[in-house]
Image 1 (spheres, rainbow, N blue to C red):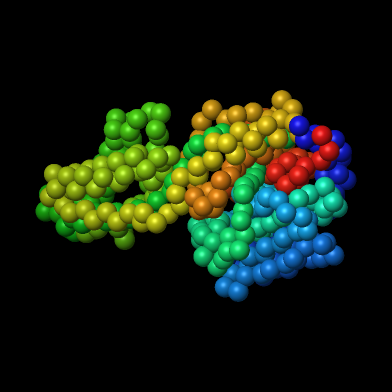
Image 2 (cartoon, one colour; image 1 turned 135 degrees about the horizontal axis):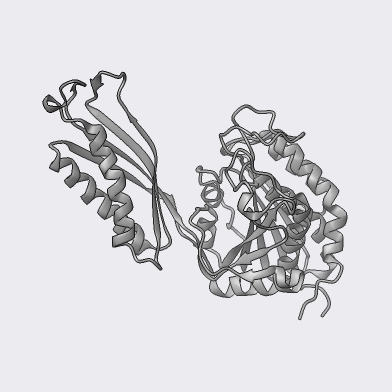
Length: 400
């Protein structure tokens, strides 16, 4: 069995560089598929390593390949690079300098850890067979950057045997590693719903068909549907995240609109929720003399499904690396990930890395996507070592 003596020490020794890289990206976050500053930071971090570097034509991806020169497996490691369109209110000295843009999901940490693992593995090239491919991906937050990279030839000419990604979580203890076979994260579809009634004077609602209470009734009915139509162990979540109606205080508007997301961990629940939402919206509107038009964008991210063998293997590697801090997760997480597109084509897995600051109780830690999210940067040494450990175990590993 492969052991990982010294690997964590190497990652710890690199931690100051890893933290510095993460903070530089945190100050200068970028959105979507075009991340020129972030891409330049990644290329600078890889400069001088024995890697074959490729960059994207249509977007700012970077692929770096470490070729051992010997036949063997090909391990794909991924770190996403983009930020979120939201303000930062952490008060950190390295807080975002870009208005309404923040690394609130930890992608800056993912990228810095992956770059750190490239340095570790480049120094251990003689211990490897096959190849390690480092995938630095833009556009995870709603732009399907992983699918863009696949469409631009990520896997062309590469016989990738396994794929692995890390996602940090401030809702788990620092240094925790967790994963599970099968569904790990939910699918994500987006919906828009317009309720059309009849406008009128606020003093005479009986001459109008007010779309606002009708829309509110639908919101409640969607939540009742989730608890009464969807199996408890095959869950789904419907979130109405935006409602808009009206222009002033004494006018009943003609229309009310709402928008949100549908999340599920199986195609069965996904299809049933969409079917039920159409039925509910149509019949509630009809009951009140209004009309409803529901549009669901079903081209969102699929369920992130870990290959069972790969997830079991990753968990075994993690236990050898961090001991009891690695464990199998009992349930999926209802967030979504475009890593799902890669796992549809390559056997692999994703694992969560806990980054809750030890001086903050877990219940009080600002979660991912919070404007106050702060990670414990020391945990990045564990992430760097874990990226390297799975590659070493797949591609020859250390001496046993």
